[in-house]
Image (cartoon, rainbow, N blue to C red; front, side, top):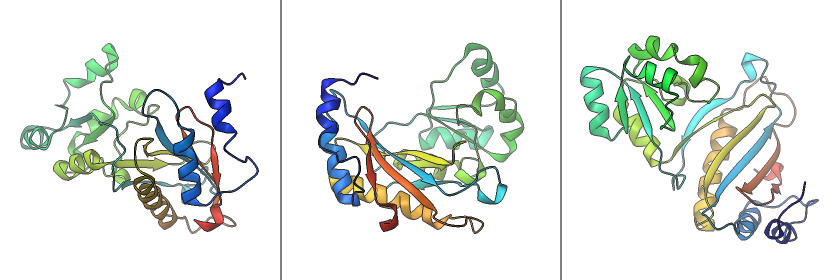
Length: 229
């Protein structure tokens, strides 16, 4: 695969064989984010979990202290008083059954997160086939199935992110933007790592965090020393 000149220059800053400390890695990722737009900084965490076993699944959510730098559009499935509450809390879209054909037939996906009150999960369940593969299905563990829609919306707007294992037992999550200061990125990253360490399944044997890589949207990856996290 041919890489662009900017990528090649940025890659020269990084020693592929080295495992960096957190602060060093963040400084390098920031330095190598040279695209013309504000790149997203992402963490890719390979775990020692085997997601095929229910007792080794990891899924949850955490509010990053400095947010993600991204404006998140929220769709809330709710009725009556809860629908009014969601609108007042700043949800971008609020609806019920009326949204089903719009999403199913018109392929409408102008939202990033879906929140639902528990009584609406029967309705939302009908969208499982389209929302599931996109990772948009509301889930009680992530705090997106709740009666407290105000708190859910406020948390998401404040920078709440969801983390879960993919099929290869890796967690992929944004921790901020290249325009963030190193301190802000370090705070966000540490908050994420603390949350993931806290939910370590008891069934996992051996090393829990196998590898941790920070990367910007267009830049090369920087490997961290997982033992120090």
